[in-house]
Image 1 (cartoon, helix red, strand yellow):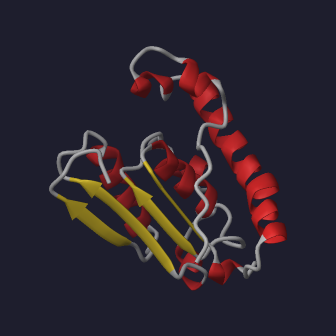
Image 2 (cartoon, rainbow, N blue to C red):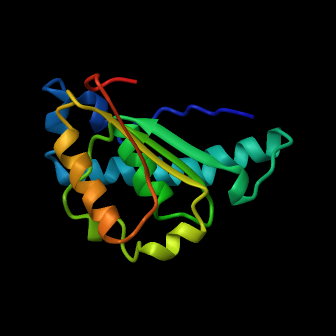
Length: 158
């Protein structure tokens, strides 16, 4: 197994803000630009570099994506919209999702179950992000998506 951990900050404005980090996500354009740049960098630069430098399987069944916090949301937005590239998806305390799941995951329905080897979503019962993650769970359940849900006693942490 090869684990690659790129910096999840696609847009410099994400780390240049001095206010509370959560306030960054209220800037919808900055948040979307960050996610778009992360996606493009991972798909167009990181994965091709790994595949050219290392002897790896490049099929989707051999590729996973996972992340915590902002990277958890990036994982879901990228992974669930690129099932031709990822079969294993893990999100931990995902931060940055909106309640507009239809827009974030267009056309995502039960057909995805045939492509997903595992969709794992975890969060702590004391995590301030619990409400949005529960709404995501309900939305996925309404589409009959198979998800491994794990709730821990912790807050916003590994």
